[in-house]
Length: 109
Length: 116
Image 1 (cartoon, rainbow over the protein chains, first blue to last red):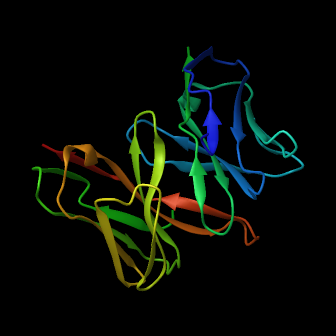
Image 2 (image 1 turned 180 degrees about the vertical axis):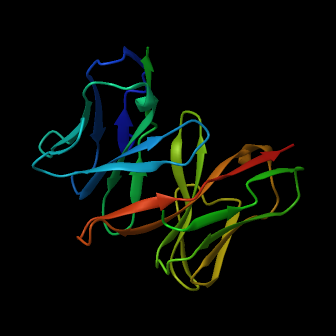
């Protein structure tokens, strides 16, 4: 079983829509959780960390459910510039990071 | 911006030749990583380093070696390149997020390698 699993999509949504991505991780010892954004032919960039209590950054909301080993990312009021691939990342211990294969989002005018 | 550069950014080489990719960082980070990214596989760890001359293998280390003789440079060598090593290679560093216990990674711009 993969350490981190994501629905690859693609998700095609109209501007202004709300879209949610889910991610599951297999190891209950995982400690830190992140969402990264990757644009075509670019490097992944940190979008936000995910905290146990849930956290919000503008139009983006991240949630963590440790009992179900599940992470989510909600994007409200989608913009064209949100089109990218979103990577779920889990840090198990120290500096070992595990990446999902990414979920592709296209926001349509 | 974590001050990470990679060179070369693009390379075409032939099967059987050695290839060295360089990652350079300017902010004295202790941990450095090499990943490859392929469709359907996501990012996979090749090797990482936790200090000068301190390295360890990742998930897909076969056919690759690394060296770190200075804090700022982490080199990845393909000893005898094969077509299966055609990929995009990313270097990364890790640091704490907002000074807290969590650590996250920042990536260099990547090197696109084509092995013919």
